[in-house]
Image (cartoon, rainbow, N blue to C red; front, side):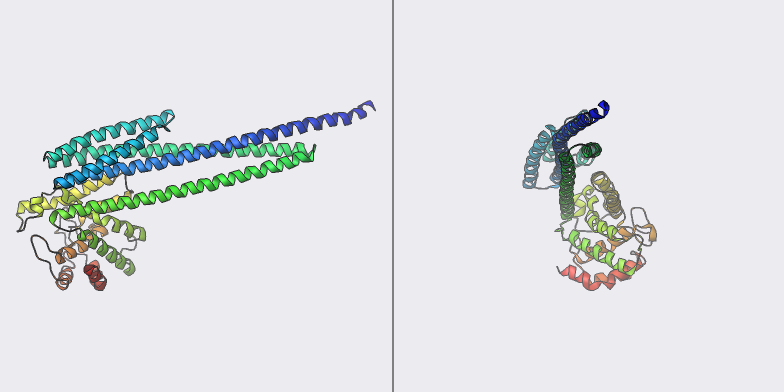
Length: 448
């Protein structure tokens, strides 16, 4: 009986103890919940900002490199001054961005990577000053050699380091997410334990447990939505950077074309011809395993780079009004292999591999001929990449109807006749037939 009388008291003590433990656990969970969510939110926001800053920094370095390249291509002091002024202003922005990033670069590995980026940036700008001075002193060829050898090497190193930093930050964000999920698992486990205890104690404990669970799920959903929004912002920012980079590439191609007195319309028209001809080939089912929508998009994007190798050809040869000598023609032919090399050196690490491959094939192969009499490799028929075969027709057609220092413009009628007559010798016969079949669309481009 005495034992029986003690059971209510023991049960009361047991329940009271369980209630105190549960209530204390709820209080601790409520406190830790705010700490966990705030830390996770801070890590995510910091990580996204770091990745945005690194993307901006990479874009500005690429832009600065392009300005230095334009400086070496400029022929007037006014154009050089403009390039130098814009490059100097961009250098200040890059320096400010580095200072801003340095405040957040904590941790041994990330700090070490940042110091490497900073060191390469300083070395790059030192070489830029030397290169610009060479251009000012008239040592154009040496300056261009520095640009395509030393400066691009620094840009590639910086790009690799930025990619490493981006991967490191992404890994930190993933670790933070893992910790958050682990905390949620622990919280849920505590929730179940507390609910078992609460079933033996007070109804108020049940209310607190359900309340904590609800808040936990709510915070998780809010954080996931915030992370999704930040990720979407990062994607949109990257797309804007890609658009800016594409415009920069087209601008550089126009600048190179202007060296032989072209206004830049050649790049615009040939890109449109390539788009129309590739679309016609798709509809006809020609090379359907290669000419996918993605491939055609990259082909049109890469078309402006076809004559980038002309940067290595002397202005004297490009603007010569008369017939070229055999030696001069050999020099002209070098722009194909040079173009492929330049695209590889400049674009690798900045653009996706398939785009770089297409741009290289166009630059190297747009003067190859179907019968094997072209240059530089003497490829024939299907040995010539499909992108280069399409580019060859677009390039020759626009050259025929355009006025050059060594010839007058030819009529559109005569140009189409030459394309048709050269089918099977100079051009892929299937593509030549398709090109003549979209004559109305091509003529519409000519009139624009």
